[in-house]
Image 1 (cartoon, one colour):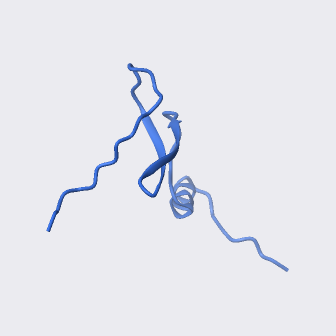
Image 2 (cartoon, rainbow, N blue to C red):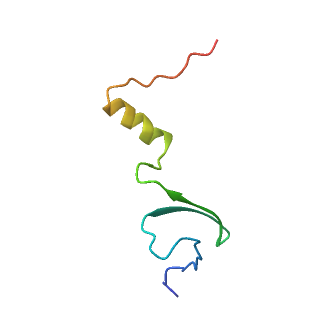
Length: 66
């Protein structure tokens, strides 16, 4: 059985001196989209953002529907 990690060859359109983070959207092994992330951007789930707000002293509560 072959236990190698699958490799994805990607061509990114960035300058040769680029350093930073890039978010990729991959579908069926092909890159369908990419975006450069700014240093102040974070990626997370709604639960993560709830935790961040609660640690900052906010109370997160659901909106009551009529």
